[in-house]
Image 1: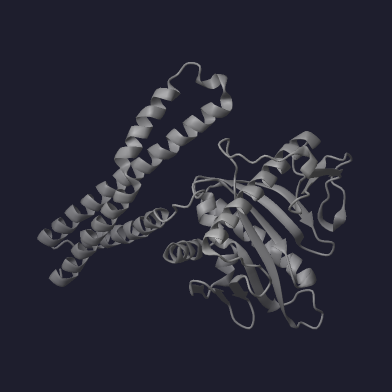
Image 2 (image 1 turned 90 degrees about the horizontal axis):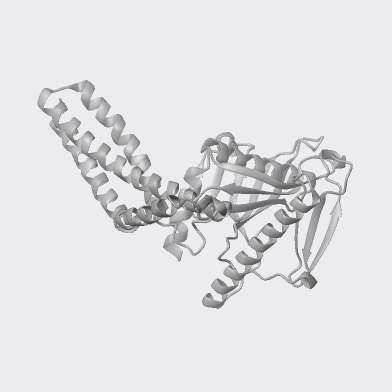
Length: 369
């Protein structure tokens, strides 16, 4: 067994231990254990479930904090175990043990890197669940098709990670694809992660809708909003909104029900329009649409505060607000304009393999804050 190889592996393990220690300094597991003790006491209250929403918040937060502490504890244990494994491999010249250590170090590196990215999610609403809207922009039917491809990319990403998501509204285009769609991802830090996806996404490909097979460029926009909580004070007077009801529609404009259950709400002061058609009743759709509107207004207030602090205001458009380009022909390349990160496997990216882009975006944002 090579002494140099083992020495290099030992150095890698020591570096992982240092990184884990710096992560703990930020995440503060002792403070989390104190919170866990307080939440466990609250959860033991026999009257807790008299208020089901409050009970769900308590148990959900307790579960999340316990999972975070358990994750840190498990990583510490695995780093210690692989250090011992390397010692044994060196002493006994055990090639199999060395190979096992190499595999475990690779897994630990990936998991600790992902946890390190989490420490960068320190924005005001980063811990929240997320509302994501995908909409077609310039490019006609290709743009509508591109928006549906992006929607699939994000829902596949959620499925890959076992995240709970719900599509709240889909507005289908006449020929193909969608005009827009809004979905909610119910996962702690979903907003912090997905907010780096906000902006214009550009697609270059041979259009399947062009009978001459020419290359087309189309655009789709992504907006990401934090889900509101009870502590948020977003007052929306009835006089500031207009509520319209209509029948839910499917692809090609076909009606999918026989009652006017879908709801569209227009916020008159800002011109923000939201709609929901996926619930069974008009009342449920109105409640869901109001929640989306409140989240959009909350994000608007946050952006205005940021812009006021920076003393500037930015306007988005198909060219000036681009964050990523996806090229499918004549070669495959997905490149993020902000971070420079790129992938030559566009098919995998469009199938939900976007973690590396999200991680790079979070690191880029932290450096530029």
